[in-house]
Length: 293
Image 1 (cartoon, one colour):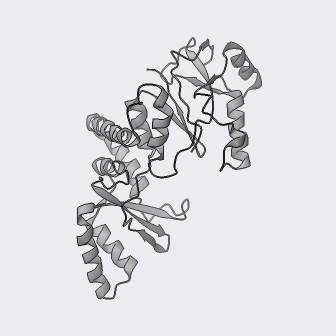
Image 2 (cartoon, helix red, strand yellow):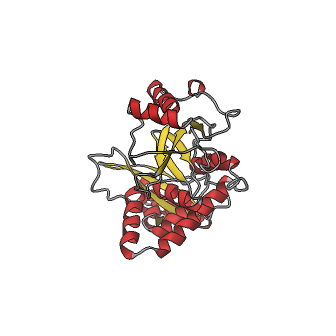
């Protein structure tokens, strides 16, 4: 993932007044006016950045879109400010480096992006993950019943979908389950018992894991899931059951315990709230735009 963006708008971004809260950056005249009013701000240290032409792993269409975003900039306005005299800022999209494409990529990218701000300099990716989970639990415990239900519906949709539905959209759907590391020997023993009865390996594993592991389908189980960084210190391992419309496709038992929970929309929101920043995902490239409160 590339294009990590970082900015403290009070210190490095000049501002301009706009008469409209929705000035379209794609409009050539509006974009020109914006560029005349503010010099585009690179949000990362240019001594460590790479031109988009030199970034590996991008398709040509992705590269063109990123180059266009870099040249035109991104117009940002505080979502809570609807006044005609509101202050907006134009940011330039720059590539700030690469991170490993594993489950920790949201947090390693965030740590790298915010490393120069002073706020997150002392935190490593695992600490950012812990802070994100803590923020979720605090916010989840303080919301009303209706909002809590909406959050849990979103969690179920991502990690415990109803396998009777969704096949018009998805070819493969996944169920995420949490197995305690301390229970792995007992789980293996139970699976072996079914194998001795003639049950196929994947069917036996599916049966035992669904019976004895924790489904990720509510707030508390999401917190357990998102705490998993793929290290030996984790309390749980992630088990993934993949299904097609015809039935079970595969079982990822994650026997080495190296799978980490990918940062999802809920985690992005919690991370942004915790550090008072705006975080956007642009296409397949993770962009972090940070704003002072």
